Image (tube, one colour):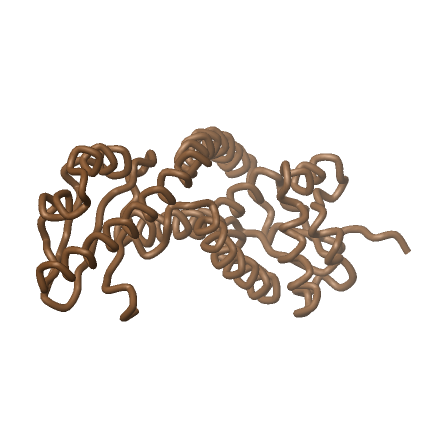
Length: 270
């Protein structure tokens, strides 16, 4: 028997589904960039390198899939509930079981590259996406919408799409490039050299120093030391905290985002 929409359930409009998608997705996108900004740019817990961004993306993507799995099982995510939509099984118009809910959530990943799985809904007579096809589901209206409501949501969808394209361009510009990653690596290597000079200074003077001038002198070539610092770190942003038993070196690399890099020692005690 061919699949089709459950009787008497209006098929959800593409514009309504798009707005529901934004409501469901934006909090995770914002969380991803905020966590990256905090862990990479503010506290320096992660290097501003492609690997760090990928690790954070994987964490947020896992939460996103879990959110959609639970939402599908309940019949609607928050976005779909706000837009008056619900997910139903093709066979019985009930919310999908857990297996189908998970399949639909993971199917979002298949639909996402180039948005092909979502664009498929424009050609499908029941506006079903690839993840709907995979899970045997469809999205319907919990209640029919008036013509004025449909026009309003269509306008909101087109405005939101334009704003989303602008944000996507800006986000791409903020992502670290290969040159950014190399600048961070060079700064981290520079910290290791400075740490070795700190150890040399301690051996000669019995204590660590918090003075860059002392480190420059201990390096054996103050002019070369100054040039190296200018090539690796943001000027006037380098800091040294030192006690009789240890030190912390911190600065900002010369990538576009001026990522924080730190190193504490003595290294042998870590």
